[in-house]
Length: 41
Image 1 (cartoon, rainbow, N blue to C red):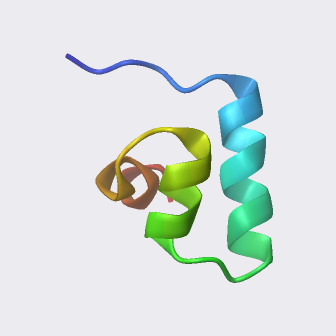
Image 2 (cartoon, one colour):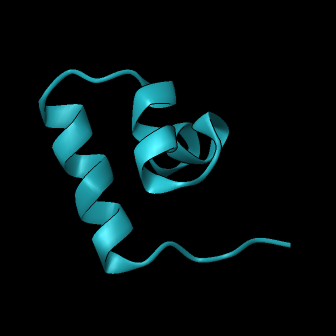
C-alpha cells in the first residue's frame, strides 16, 4: 500500500538532490526506500 510523503519529506528529498546525495543517502534520512526516492524524481 502506498503511503504519501509529507511536505517535510519532499523538502528533504529536494535538499538531498540539490546537494548531490545518492538516493540511498536521501532515503535513509527521509525514512523510506531508495525506490520511493527514484519514483518521486
